[in-house]
Image 1: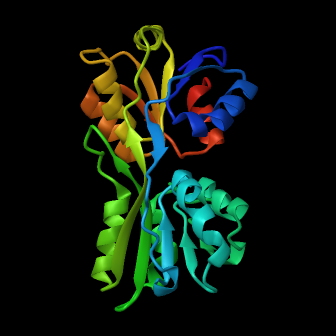
Image 2 (image 1 turned 180 degrees about the vertical axis):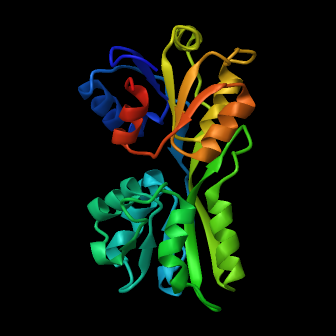
Length: 254
């Protein structure tokens, strides 16, 4: 992973990729935007009475985007919001949730994920407590192993009840011939692929079946994503924290 003149393939959904593209280009990298997940809201989501819950777990900024505007005006006093990382927490604050109601991992946590969040919120769970898990639903491929399921297990072990509410759908994008050609070239020209989702790895295999990834450098923002990449055939993967600084350090020469 060489000089800052190299190209980085940003695979985040289109609505999330812009800030990463800007930050990487400010550090001197070229970027290629190839979203590997399409995100769409689900129609006719049944709105549960929030007053019956002790906390709402938001799995991502998209969960906030597709659900919070419909409920924030009548947010129950004292209802906690759980965010697995700073991006989701910031989306909640921008959306109108008071900062003192938001629980998130420490800024210096090794990872921003369900495990780091549980270290902060586990004391809130007890028999009779109820959590609403606002999340997406996958279409087309099985999702990679997820920390969300792990967190559900922890809540269940504490005898708390979790209600799962899908509010958006993650789908495999449909590429034009030009995009498929760009991706195939980026697999062999030394570009570094940046992954923030194990599910995106599965969609990539659907979009470029049979591609040899053994010589393609990649950066993954969580160990679970690294495992998905290795299973897909990537042999040159670095695992970093999901921050711009950590990604830039991984991309820059030692």
